[in-house]
Amino acid sequence: MTIAAIVWMTAAIGMACGAGLPVLALVVTAAHFIVVFLYPELAARLPPSRYLSFGLRVVYEDGRGILRQIITESTRLGLAIHRVVTQQIEGGPIAGVPAVAVTFEVRGKPSYKS
Image (tube, rainbow, N blue to C red; front, side):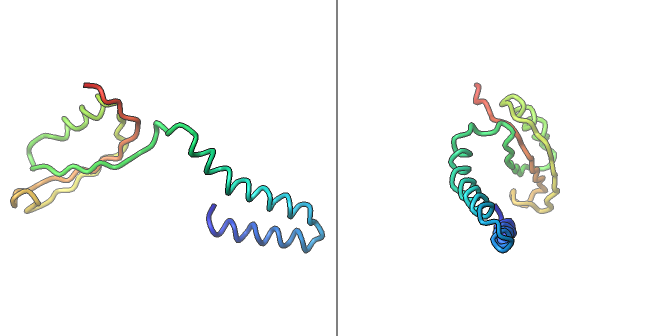
């Protein structure tokens, strides 16, 4: 929960008490503690999502044609590429040779097949 949600909930509990509804205030307070303490335990026991995304950044010498190989290998491993951002690096980090930086947003659970 965010801090703002907790502030709003605290205000609602205070208004319930002020309106003469202490049972409602107690139920909401108990529900809050159940969510705060039990939800993380439940979430930790769930299997990891196969749609979890992560970033992959590759820098290579311009003109090498490595992008196709990266996409092919990612697909072979069972990953799905959802976004590709390329950036030309002049006088790049590879011995002053023009380079390309490619950032992928990759989703999926890789299978490590040979």
